[in-house]
Length: 336
Image (cartoon, rainbow, N blue to C red; front, side, top):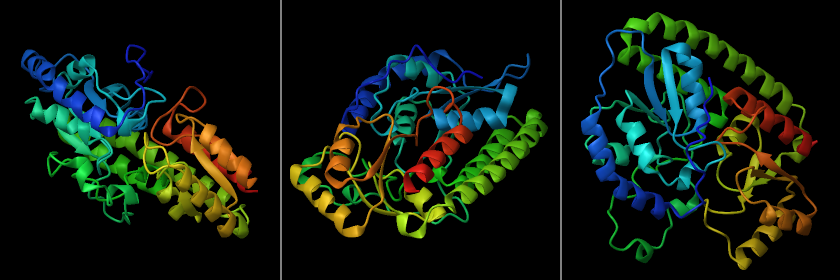
């Protein structure tokens, strides 16, 4: 299934407040669309369940579980940045026509819940895959989420940062991604009970594929020498990956997408890299690499600038499984 959406433009990286302003501006559009289109499951005709997911990664998980039983649309396009995504009027219509909305949760994509609920589309079921998972050791969010200047947010709603209680990037731990899939299977069966057997079968097959992927990741990461396991990442995207596969993230280059560090912060990071014996710098393909390259040149470290986390890419990085394989191959190579 083709998950790309050529009609959706790739927005510039903006501060998170811009995305929230766009949500407010789009509320009226979505209200009108919601009134014009129903959200109940078609009872006949064999039509696929219409699902909207925030990211291409989540959309792929839905597609793997649902197969031909679902038609899934990601809102944030390939290479987009979910933290700072700016919804468009066409996204409002897409949400209004959905029968299920799939979020990550934990504050990563709360703008979509706000967009749907504030527009009166509360009858559309919403599932937040990262929330309340059994057996997950939730990690603290980035420090900036807890130490923001109160003056900067004067006049904003008290609940504006509600949900940012843990780092949201659980899916980069394959075992946790399996928990996402388990939650998806049960959600799809609840919404579409007539096709429960299909979701069970495709979901079980995909869970087996993820179990094999987890074994492969551990085998690959075991080849990294113990002395080469201290790294720096571009932002707080990899702590669950690091915790699962025995890496130590010494620091990050930026606090959050759209927030460039000061010259003093960069100098402190370079000093820390030298003091802590860091082996490599990890950055993601959707972010500019100039700052990462500058720090690498100052420290002499290996740098990987084409990792993926919350967005898929063009082939061969066009599925969750291939994303993990791509990242692991590059991480292991850099740390050897």
